[in-house]
Image (tube, rainbow, N blue to C red):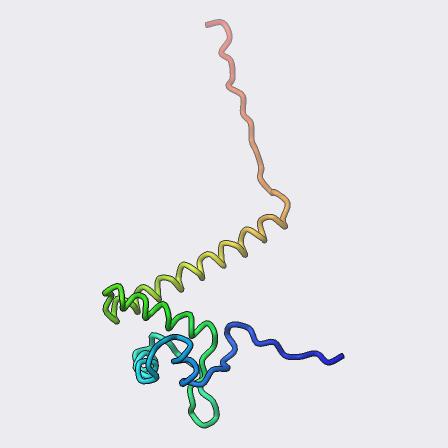
Length: 119
């Protein structure tokens, strides 16, 4: 029984021509998006770009936003904000996990009102 390697969505496996075909964009468009920092594929030994499935999804998102009339600066900002939201959601989930694993350490102090006698 051999154990095979299964790439996840962040594994760079697609050369630019395949990434362009999958994303429905021209290879030159992918190069431009790389230069602008909208998508940052990894580089192979020969400086060839290698795209992951996550990169392909991002290319499609850039294409969709562009088709909706958002300029490249706006697309960059949208992508940055989406990354921030994702990061905050992950942090929140980790915090919730830690909170659920720890017993409550809350301290409740009760002070009854003193009654004034003979008034």
